[in-house]
Amino acid sequence: MVNVLSDEARILCHRERAYLVMDRLGLDALCVSDPRNVLYLSNFDCNLMWNWSWTAFAILPRDRQRPPTLVCSSLDLPSLITNPTWMPAVETYVLHEQGTGEAVATKFRPNMREDARLGPFEREALALYDTTPTIRAPTPEDILRAVMEKLGLTSRIVGFDDMRLALRLKGNLAGLTLRDARDVMREIRLIKTPAEIDRLREAAQRNERALGAAIAATHEGVLWEEVVQAYAIALIREGGRPIYLIRGAGEQARVRLQETDYPIRRGELVFYDGLGQYRRYHGDIGRTAFVGEAPADVRRVFDAVRAGWAEGHARVRPGMRASELAILIRDTMRAHGYPTGPARAAAPHALGLEHFDHPQDRGFYQDFTIEVGCVLNVDMPYIEFGWGSLHLEDTIVVRRDGPEFLTSNKTDLIEIAG
Image (cartoon, rainbow, N blue to C red; front, side, top):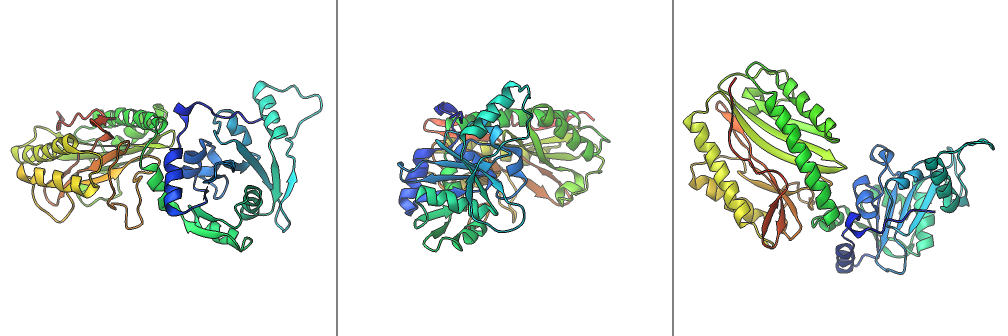
C-alpha cells in the first residue's frame, strides 16, 4: 500500500491557501500536469515527468469529502517509496499501444520469475503494484476522464494549469467547465510553506557556494567559459543543478552575448548572476568583482547599488507592492549617485519552483503584493555600454518582524588581484 506522508513539516503545498483561493475563484477543483505543480500539490517527484508531457497529474478538490488524488504512470509508482505523497488516493495507469479503447481497470505486474529472490525495494514496489488501482487507457485525457468521473468532477468548474490538456478532456466531458489555473497556482505558491523554505534555504546556500567557486576561478586571462564551468561543477558537487551563470566581463557581458570564450582582462568589471536548482527549488544570487583595484567611479556606482539594497531590505514589509519596493530602491540609489538610464534599476521577483514564482499573466516582472512567507529576490544590474556591468542580488524570506536572509548578504565589491 502507498506510504502516505504524514509529517506536516515536509508537505510542500499550502493547502489552506489553496482552498481559500479556490473558494474566492469559485473553483471546484484544481487539476495540474506541469511537473512543478504536481510536485507542489502532491510532494510526488519522478524524473520522467520533468521530460515527458502529461506523465503525472494531481487533483485537489475543494470539497474535502472528495479525496485529493495523485495519478502517475505504473513505471513511476515506485518513486513513492522515496518521495511519498500526502494525498490519500493514488491511481496509476498504463497506456494502450497506438489505437483506441475505453479506460478500464487493470493490474500492472512487472516481469518476474516465480522463484525470484526480491530485494527490499522490489518487495515494497510489488506491494505498491498490488494495492494501487490501475487504469488502462489509450490517452492521458482518457485516464483523467476516468479519475474525474470517480471523483464526481465531470460537471464541475475545474482549474487546469495546461489548457491544451483541458480542451482535449472537454471533448469527452461536455458538462465540465474549464478555467485557466496556471497563474492561480503561482498565486497559491507565492506564500511558501516551511518545507519549501527549507528547500529554498538549501538551494540558496549551495548555489552561493558554487558561485564562490566561480569567483575563485576568476583571474586575468581566464576564459569566461572556464568560470562558468567552475560554477557548474561546484553546484553539481553540491547536489544541485546549474541553469546558468551570466553575464561575465567586458563587451560580451554588456551586450549579453552567449559566446563564452571571452578572456577576462585586468581593469574589467565581472558580472555574476548564478541561477541553479536544488531539489527542484531555485537559488539565485548576484555579485560583482573587479580585476585589479577598482577606480572611484566604479565604487561610486556600486556603493549606490548597495545603499539601495540596504534600504530595500530594511524597509520591505508585508502588504507592500513589489513596484513600491522597486521605486524605494531606485530612489535611494539615485540619491547616492546611481546614473539614470532607460533600464529598470531594481526588479523584485518571487523565487521558488520557478525563477519568477509569482503571477505572470502580464509579463514576468508583473507587480504583486508582498506577503509574509514570500521568498523574494531583487535583480539590481547596472549595464553601461563602453564602461562596464555590475550586479547585486540576494534572497530573503519576508517575515512580520523583518527579512530573513537565505543568502549571506555579503555585498562588498570583490577585488581580484589578477
